Image 1 (cartoon, each protein chain N blue to C red):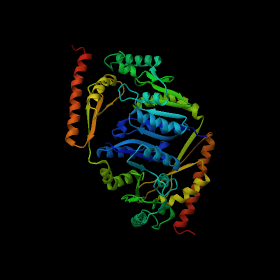
Image 2: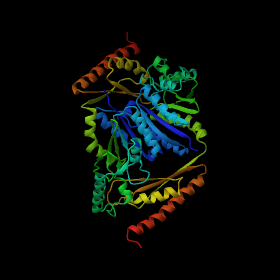
Image 3: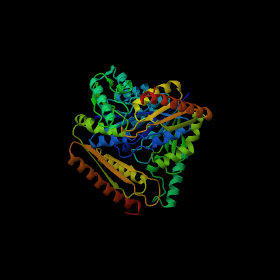
Image 4: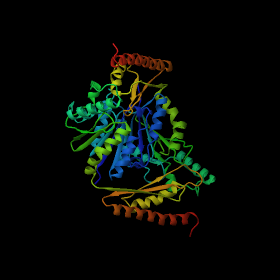
Length: 271
Length: 271
């Protein structure tokens, strides 16, 4: 039913704690909104060996989509496409369309006065060297194009790590391809205050709900122990039909309210 | 030389984009400050199969330390310890010390008025059911103890996902064990403004530096293309001796400044 989607975030700056990886969080939100579900996120160092291994891990688990972020720039620690080519056993070659794209971007940035010369240097050209057979994804913000490669039934989308560029490429190019892959799905989440201060008291109720509503994912959001804590509960589900998903969630919330009344009676000295 | 450290973040709430995983970022920062380096972060769903697979992936790559966060609470979607036991092929049993700990915590929370009864229910007891042979890590904030298990030379530290609890257990218990494992190391990072507006111009200089200073990790932090961009560069390195690391970083920064002057002359119409 569910197409496995994975994200690979690439960059030592994240692993040394310099940068918080907000990209994968943003992508998870966007993908769930499309009715997809990210099954795993792997954050790795910008080393070819590590990136290839992450791709192998994701691919082995039958992912239909792998999204990589980071490592597409002109500097030599940007190794994502080299790793993708190695993983998919294909050559890296200059992609003419990508070269035209990079040229036009630097021409534009030069005209705007953002860069000091418009010519294509080897470093700029590097961003047009793509795995053979891959498709360019236009970057409306930066100079490095995104790259889409289909490998044995799995789409690998590689996008830059700069959040603005990542988001723009996702919204412009990837979203429609993803919709085709995922199909028309609907995701809904509703959050309520449980009225309960303590997760251990919630647990038996959630167990009952999990059995009665297998298609609903219910998550309690524990806080620290304190006065007047009221643990939030979120109910989420996805499916083909909006109304169906909505009804299912409302039913489970109503059932929770029934249970909670019984529970409170038990513990607060009710029958 | 370097001990491989991995982090596994557990929780569907992260994969559906409800919660940003800030724990792994915080841990990366703390670990780099100790001179260690997190080699990979894997974020997985709270499913035993997924958690066991993540543990296998980390272990296979000869990690000396695996830190898991999340999935230690009283609700039945908290499955981390079950997965750790499965991974390490050991039994789950009531740990008496952990049970005393959980009891004392709920007694305390009851006395404070945070929970409505002090007794140990099956849900509360669950938090004292640990993989056989593991060691309790006291939790000064919440009710679920952290757990340390040594498996074939690899330390697995499991800590709750609530950031306050995660941090407290790390600072109180894990840090000293980690220092023993990592050894006395020193990490330093210095960030400078490069004076360059365009990564493609920086790239050849960084290539030279990478060759001349293999022990220094230099990262450019690209922004979008715009007027008056000045790309930041961070220089980082770790080693046994503070002075040695400091000197190495200063040398590489000085060398960068030399190079940049030559570069600017070339491009801005110098000799």
